[in-house]
Amino acid sequence: MVELGGFRRYFYELARHKESVIEEGHLMPDHVHKLLSIPPKYSVSNVVGYVKGKVPFISPES
Image (tube, one colour):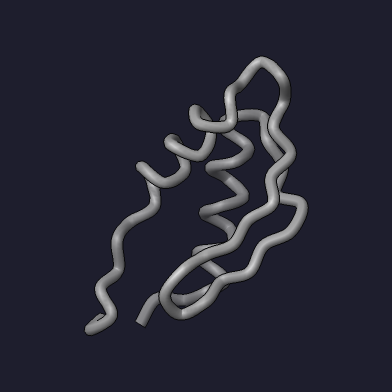
């Protein structure tokens, strides 16, 4: 079982790498909602692609 606190820290660290801030977020058993503040020098797709690419896939059977 994956610890949710670990996911939270991981998401905050990933956002920080792109100079972004997670303003609000919700971790659900099968998906995630995040509201990010992204500086103008980064595109939304750049930051979201970076975060999604770094988050490990956890199968429901885990």
